[in-house]
Length: 350
Image (cartoon, rainbow, N blue to C red; front, side, top):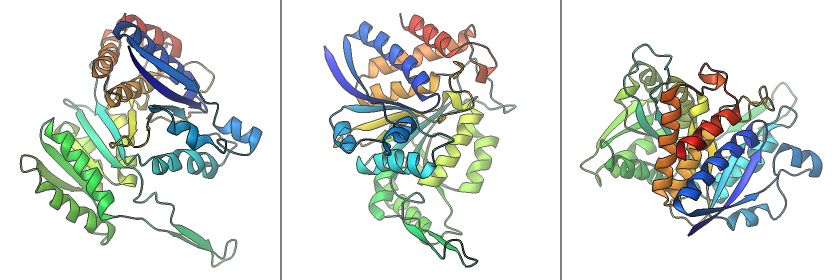
């Protein structure tokens, strides 16, 4: 029997609610395929911070290193600054564990309505650089509180960082339609984005079977709406990828279906898997959050754990429930509860 030790951080808001249903789905798959998941629940998040003054304990990073993967719900609370929640847990995790690949699929399921009139078939992957770029913690303030207050925020682009995320996108494209669209803004950002473009061209030479397209980020935003069916694999910097994938989530029906993986491809450190939607404090505790983004993130986790049959079982269950339209959560126009959706998915697997 295959065994996997998974650190579970439900976190804040709807995080624990959706993660609970995703774990039920994983356990149903495990029962069918003789896979044992050892879930280690870690009570870290805003409540932990309010009790202890820290978002995670002193040995927290060492604890996480002992796991095969990290399953993450959400972080963020209205009464705790983002400088604590995001900048002391989420972003440091990506850097400490070198999770430089942020993978976010965009897929329009049968049975789900897109807000676009004629969306066509939407099925593409966004590879977002996850450890440097515009989110690098480099900068500072001068003259705080004075008329001359000055803020500096420095984007960091390294040849290594650009190369490895772009190369990961090309590797993915080799298994798909062999088209990579690189998102840039080198007409305005003449240092970091010029390096990005240079590296993209260099990497493309190693993959002569793959077509490289380059698209300015503003044009990409338009084309995500005008013709999303034309994309196959998209690769973007930290900021551009973050913004564009929120857009891709909406054109495919709901952020409640948007999954993501934060991957260390070398497996030197554990990778982390989380739904894109965040903590959604406005609906936390109401039992109406759509757990499918967490469930689909679990499928990405099983892919990474090389349990591909289990991952496909999860995706097939989601497709079945969505196309059947009998159990529909509020974000997709229905009234099914979080647990209702979890029950339907478990039944579909069974």
